[in-house]
Image 1 (cartoon, rainbow, N blue to C red):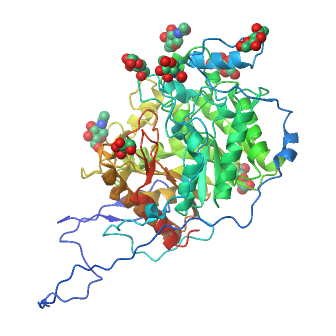
Image 2: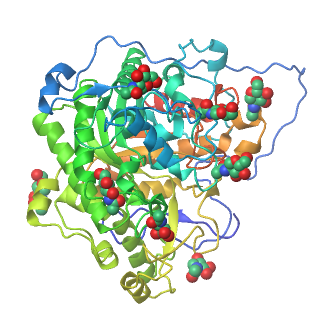
Image 3: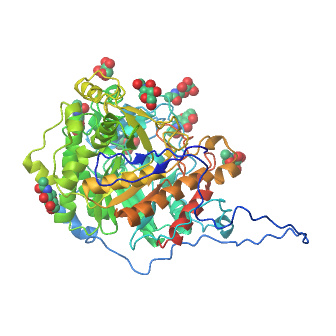
Length: 621
Ligand SMILES: *[C@@H]1O[C@H](CO)[C@@H](O)[C@H](O)[C@H]1NC(C)=O
Ligand SMILES: *[C@@H]1O[C@H](CO)[C@@H](O)[C@H](O)[C@H]1NC(C)=O
Ligand SMILES: *[C@@H]1O[C@H](CO)[C@@H](O)[C@H](O)[C@H]1NC(C)=O
Ligand SMILES: *[C@@H]1O[C@H](CO)[C@@H](O)[C@H](O)[C@H]1NC(C)=O
Ligand SMILES: *[C@@H]1O[C@H](CO)[C@@H](O)[C@H](O)[C@H]1NC(C)=O
Ligand SMILES: *[C@@H]1O[C@H](CO)[C@@H](O)[C@H](O)[C@H]1NC(C)=O
Ligand SMILES: *[C@@H]1O[C@H](CO)[C@@H](O)[C@H](O)[C@H]1NC(C)=O
Ligand SMILES: *[C@@H]1O[C@H](CO)[C@@H](O)[C@H](O)[C@H]1NC(C)=O
């Protein structure tokens, strides 16, 4: 850029301080590192030409097989006594073409009741059942697939390393990869009715339910240590509610998944609820389930009065079966996005805190427990405008504070939330005491940054007017959210969706999180859907340099946050280890592997190698 140069300066002392400072300057980029004098001239000569270029061929190194096992709780047999006795049964798969309907109508939880749940969900055109119906045995990844790709010409040149114990892994969620949605006893969830509004169907996705061994094998072959996934509540408890029978096939399946992750030398981490709320909580009218909520994007039914007990009961069933082998538990994924109203937020807080107390106090779990939060960090459009700075702080505190204030500080909801959501459920001193300290770290999904200003430029009052008015188009955050900086530039290189490459803002964001909630931070998900990738030739999809830039620049700024800003970052999980179903879309490719939608074949992308190499070169296990 000629004429002007932007310098980024981090201010970590005050929460409302803006992070970006524009310093007007002239002339081209300075090169203080260069020693050549301006008056030296090149000398020219002839040599004999040869095609030979020297390069090193390197192969990815698999994670070593485990030499010892770590346990995080007593074995399932002993933990079973912590919950009421369960009954176990199986239901098999739903066949919408069945000619003889189930006749066990007297059994509340029989095959007929189970089938009725699918008929009620009524997924449209339910014909795509995938190409697999049993678990595929894994095959070793051929070494030809593990050759590192050509490096990008420009890359990080830092000398930092990751601190001891830094967790590097990949993450995913059940409904986005499993497929087999009506098989082995699973009942419908919110995800199975999201497909109603004519979006690409979710029934097949990556068939990970049968392909998990190969998927795990492929990630292990790349040398990644941590494997984070979510379990489907409706596979564990098809009837969702406390006291209903446990699905033996669901328990067996996730036991196999966990055991195979460990067998391959990796560490399993589980999310209990990643958007796939059982349909039971939506009552009799599914149209209402699709109505826009007051707060998030989708109504996740957390406000249902039966939800908290049911969630806690489900968590207890899952934990008593799996906790001996699971290193980290996430209760909720991005709960704000699926919160309907104030009661939803309160129910999530309560249910989460109850699970935490069960895990630590009763089950005596030695693993970690947290939540994964969403928020694309809001930065003030003009850092010199107090109204823009106020707007950014309003935006960030609204998205994180309702959960993080009580959980990390034992403090009430933030004002931004209280003045906007008029039906918020007040937190009593007893609530705050019970919720305080119920997460071991702060899980954040910091995909990108976003530019924030008040609805009316320069007018803080316009934020407050919106907060008072349920009809305002700017709700719920009551700000004008854009992607261009004050000079009209996009804030970073654009992806297929809302994600822009914004590494320097990530560094500020980590400071914001650490200094506000005073807890270690894990990047629980982050990733980049390259623009138009789905339309490219396979070979072009595989050489995904923009995604490498995203990952390497983000991780470079994480290192600066750790070493230069004193921010405690303890883990990073790439979303996702393969392209998947992005809530109605197969074209938003967030993966570091491709998936052939006909054959289900996976292929490593360049960014997968680049990210792993970056991490390993800096000491990550
Ligand atoms: C229900 O159907 C099964 C086979 O479809 C049959 O064996 C059984 O006798 C039936 N039970 C009743 C009560 O009709
Ligand atoms: C139901 O029958 C139709 C027509 O034969 C077939 O195309 C479809 O795959 C079947 N659906 C399932 C889920 O078996
Ligand atoms: C179901 O199939 C019919 C006929 O092929 C098609 O018109 C309709 O759009 C499909 N519905 C959905 C939700 O995919
Ligand atoms: C809440 O969930 C229960 C299932 O536990 C359901 O029977 C009820 O209809 C739901 N309430 C609403 C308002 O949807
Ligand atoms: C379901 O809810 C929608 C939206 O509130 C409403 O329009 C519709 O009449 C309801 N249907 C039934 C059967 O109650
Ligand atoms: C929350 O817990 C922490 C750690 O135990 C404690 O220092 C803090 O005072 C508590 N906060 C409140 C508001 O009680
Ligand atoms: C939001 O701000 C941008 C400038 O960043 C402006 O162009 C746009 O008109 C504003 N949007 C609304 C709806 O006020
Ligand atoms: C998927 O695999 C099939 C069969 O090998 C092949 O014909 C097709 O081109 C592949 N699709 C892509 C996008 O590579």
